[in-house]
Image 1: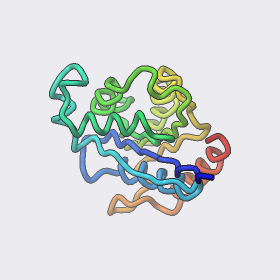
Image 2: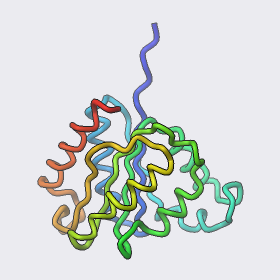
Image 3: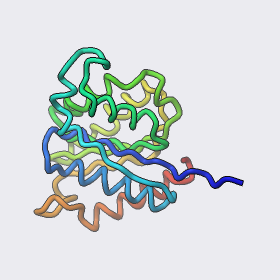
Length: 178
């Protein structure tokens, strides 16, 4: 009798900067999901893939690290995605990356949405833009997203205890659906 493989949770940070509050957020969420589900977590930072993602229009023209990141996303069991709010939506880098994901590659894939914003009003990014994008992919968007503003981080861009409580609530609601 074989033991089931651990769930692979892949987080994607759509931030064009490093270090990034968005990376801290998606990494924290993925780790919490991995702990709750007995899985493994990894984070893909798009900031380091900017040049490779801009190398061509078609996926075969992209650099090898960008293609590998796309494959890791498409083969993940669970996704955690996040982007900083930029002009009321996700970053162009986030969009460029997901433009190369296969249209049917994420069907029924559980996805937990998150976003970082400078102001509380920018948090609508999760409900209005990210939810719509992953509906296009026919993914199983999990019930509670985790938007946050600057108050969710300390001066070193680490997640605060208050934000960890919100992450725990999202993970608790997501776990039975994964």
